Length: 375
Image (cartoon, rainbow, N blue to C red):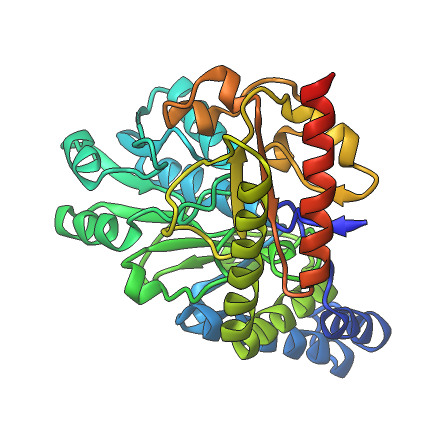
């Protein structure tokens, strides 16, 4: 099996797995306990907090551990809204469900919400954000890079605008942290979501960066863990894995970016040479180095993925929509026709993908496409 679905999830790095296992074996104590075993667990957790902070250019007290990207997004959005009690939020039509659905939930509670569109390259326009701002706007939440197309959003500019207007800004960076350099100061954001299973860490653990001074209402209630925002005994092994994944990402960032970009370009060129009419969905350059979303007109993506599933792991879009035989909302928001959206697949490379695997993948996908065209 050739794995080209790294945007859905990544294999756990061996060094990350070792960090998790080490804590499971030796630091089993409750980090809230005052004895030595508990203090060792607490130390593991605080080491990881530092590792996360260093990767994204934050300070350790600004990092809150969560159960993953979905909880971090919900905490940022609903937690801010509950603190404000009323007002208006701006987001986009291409957000992950863990952003879209909290916004819809808040709409049902009486909050206002504007969903700005994107251009044909999948990018939000700064001017559309500016036009959407109201007197009662208290939050802008726009993803850093889209999970389906890999296209980067102009977060630095949106963040600068938000600061100018005194509005809080959150970005879902689940697809960028660990894959490309991310710095919260450069991005001008107040809150940022981290999901470690997107960059060779364990599932079920993540983090929310909260700039000093940001206040949120909790979504769950219990003891005062994680500044009262994540009650319950901490997942110390998972947290240790998150920290190690961040440390490894920082060390090997340049290598990972250049490697995935090289292989993704090789994959794109190979498919374009063989498959007539193939088109890239999204911006050709302003996208994640590992992500390629392509349309193969006349070929249903579900049929194509079914034909190659025993040899190449890929997807038709977000893993959160797997099994749904309907066009991608992200691609439709970009103005792509329903037929072309249903003919699109996402291929995402990783740090361990090889050139030989890329060559094999091109062969396998091309053969499947030709068979479908003939049928």
